[in-house]
Length: 396
Image (cartoon, rainbow, N blue to C red; front, top):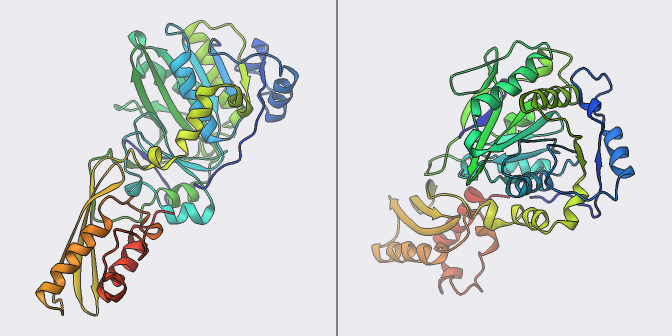
């Protein structure tokens, strides 16, 4: 089965306390270093230097954390707090998760049923671009630069050279995507005030079946103002070279970054426990895990649903902005009830759902709710619509 990654476009994870920081000698990350950056080596070095204070003034950071909430918040902290004039490189991996772009609609990007069944989280990042799947089989890179000198083509070529150094015949297309044969690698960009960054995912040995399942949305008939992902064929770089490992890619990207920007300082090795002492990172992790950020940032959309019942055929049009229902319009054909009764049903639906969080109707369907129509318990059509919409719009 062909796997696809999405581009331009909860299931909580365990978090730990404490903080560690370490630096490696500069030769550890040399391109041809056969030792690589194994996880055990990094953890040992980090633990040995646990008294060193983490700060945003290093040139290169390698995170040993696999918590996506931490890594995305750490990336944002570096972006907002590092010196404006300094180039910066961050490399990290995440445990399985789906990450969508800042301006995307999760209901048109994510298969929530599959995520829920696999206990895999979904996050909205702070940059644009499309939906991507992360697991330990892909390595994420983030290159931060002064806005005045930010050039996505230059950073793309930097990563391209790193891939080519692993013996892979890759190239850049017209959209600055890194391609190997017909397959594309994923990246996104963000520009704010005086800084910009280029970040992306490099598929090395990722589980492509999971990628395809989690990014295959089940939602139909939804028109959204959000940025839609473009489905593109992807593959693992390991398909093209046995050298395509996390350690080798980390070494290669770091070596190219050093050459491109004249960096000679040691890299900072970071664990997720760093965040407990940095308020900005801690608050960022908390925000990423809230409904208001994950769903409440969703652009306007209209979802049209159709259903046949024993008492008639109906169509419901749900209008939403920022994840909240703005209006519900019910219409019907071959409805076997009087016109006044159907008009009451239309009004009851509008009253009941307007202002609700889309996708969470199950949590509010109660006759004790002040918005529940008085005749709810005696209205079979309204109960039918409730049951239908609970299933048709349920998120997770």
